[in-house]
Image (cartoon, rainbow, N blue to C red; front, side, top):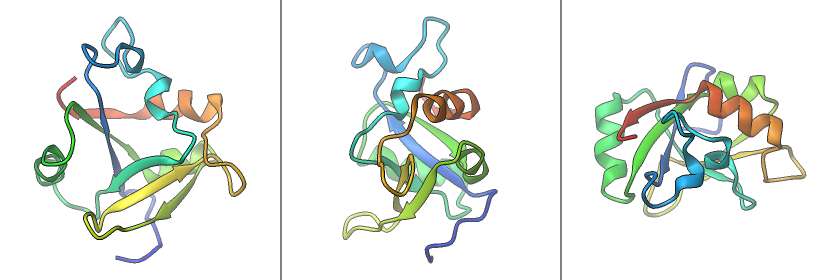
Length: 123
């Protein structure tokens, strides 16, 4: 893997279930824009074209709750920047930032990603 992201690559995010963090979910069961707010950069796992089931299986070892994804193209359409930031524990770790100078996604970016995300586990 390198630092380039293809527009069709999926970026996966774990989100606490409503009974733990109600603000991440709307009443209709869809994902709230609050699930995309993190002042330190939005932590995601890049899909690297793995099957959803494989990604979910790996993420469930580290996270509790639902797992959703957005496409790289959704981030680019929202004007967000994606950084590949692997760690010793997770070679897929990446972050989505609002801009080069600001890690927090704007309200517009968060809403856009919330409307374009898809839940692949839980929720």
